[in-house]
Length: 427
Image (cartoon, rainbow, N blue to C red; front, side, top):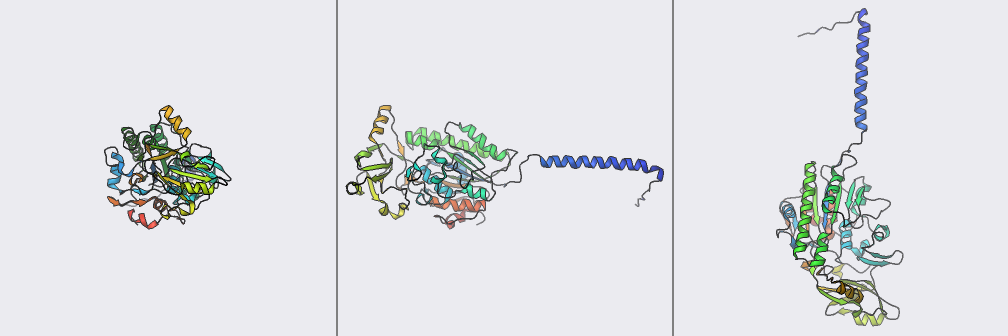
């Protein structure tokens, strides 16, 4: 059918012009409205599949599959699950969390103990939140800094090292460690980081849970209180994943722990190892650091070096090569490793604890090759293969996997990128 166009007569032109102007005004209104919508603070384009890295402090590798971890068991069954993960030496919280974040051994990233000394920076202890913000203690670039340099937004909850700015860079969203924050509030806030309509969605979200470690120290790794803490964290992870799924976010999930936990009811006074007038005690617990005082070097060496009934001591150059430890200047001249189940504390501390009725039942910090020290590794999500089982892996191999998932450049490190490459759905 042909349609003929009717040209306007001269007397129709004012009417035509009026209609034209009305249409122009209407189109202008639409364009301005669209511009206003575009300028509103909506979330920019974001990765459809962010990386969720979860650490459960003190969770033993053999804690899964015992009825306390239905969420983790499902992730392990449907994803990638290692028989265990060998922690780095010393088997302590801060050194191993920074190894997971950098791919470097503590001997190379500078966090050589939970308690250490530096001639320029002074003393570092994990309870000092202010010291943890001093960048000089953390001598390697963590994953979140590398991601931010690449303009990938990151969000970190309480991960050791995340409150220290490197080259002025911090995670875009972050929360310092605060054990008083209730678990449901933690999940609410972390989920909000991902699902809020404003701001960039994190490409990397790292979250740290401390309650299993605390219960393990207080009651032992197999106590009902520790199992209850494990259930609490498992439930929290399930709630977080549910919240993300409701928002249409299906993350690549990597769940790790920093170390395991052993029954440790036995105490020895560190003064029984070395007299205070003969040596400065740099660190206590399970990995004892001692610096002989001037004029007492030979006496301290003669008393300590070698294998004793409850511990073994080495000078720095003689620390076994398998521990990858002993070159960093923050490591004291003599290092003593306690036998599994033993702790060395100052006598005054032991007496105060006895008077208060405080008796630790569990500890870590022992030989990293002990089964009790094995940590957890599992991975689940679109990036990973399904139903894959691995033997015991080394925790320095986790970082290259995380970097690859995020599409970041891999720096030279202590891990082997080939170890975990086969777990990817598209190697």
